[in-house]
Image 1 (cartoon, helix red, strand yellow):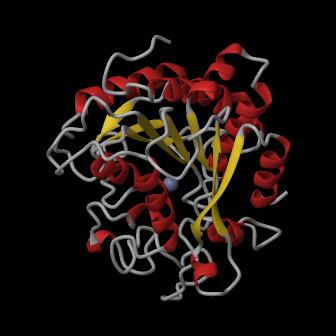
Image 2 (cartoon, rainbow, N blue to C red; image 1 turned 90 degrees about the vertical axis):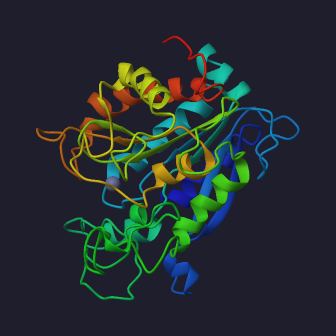
Length: 329
Ligand SMILES: [Zn+2]
């Protein structure tokens, strides 16, 4: 089942819980070349004013964003595990029911659907496509496109890479429609609680953002573009460590964990422009049987989902007051 069909099926089966949104186009769709809508689901026991595309809803928001890098296939699968957990456990599991009653749980399960099509385009061997399908520069199968995780409108850096590099940042900040889709969604549904780059986000922030990547078993907290401390660094790391208690991934900032900076990435954008506590989870170990972009499917059941399920639940709880008193675990 394609991802649009899965989203539509969930929305149809759970109409009182799921609102489905088209938040923008993929690059191919924007050019009239086929392609896809970028879709977002908002899951909550819907009351008046919930899951509207505005920032006035009463419930805190947890936003989970996946498969912006197409070949990182475990990330989309984790997003669907999360969606299915929320709808299938509502009314059955007290913890999940309380969350679905009291939070807006937003999910963008497939942030780069054109890239995912490229991964699947060779039936005998997945193509290791990371970027979107923008073919302004033709670099060959698997190497053409813009890196959507270097294309945000915050700290965009033209020196991140050339057109054929994996970190090609694109023609300019938010040049790609997929970037505009996620930035547009987050801009609409969250209040901006942060001023200038050096100002801290304020204590009344009521949202939390996680973007899923593979691999390395890391939780990356802002900033990712510099080793200068983020204004809220102590609080960001403290919350990251709470999530780490579930998945065991160490929390790092700057280039401390991964050995490189990521200017123009989604997480720095969400924190830097909106004030959201924003994290990258690098799912999967750096070596061993579950490492790599295409781990065996059994790794989902054996480690990826059991490790991250609790972290997502914790994140959704913490969205109510992420810079204040954190919930226990
Ligand atoms: Zn990635």
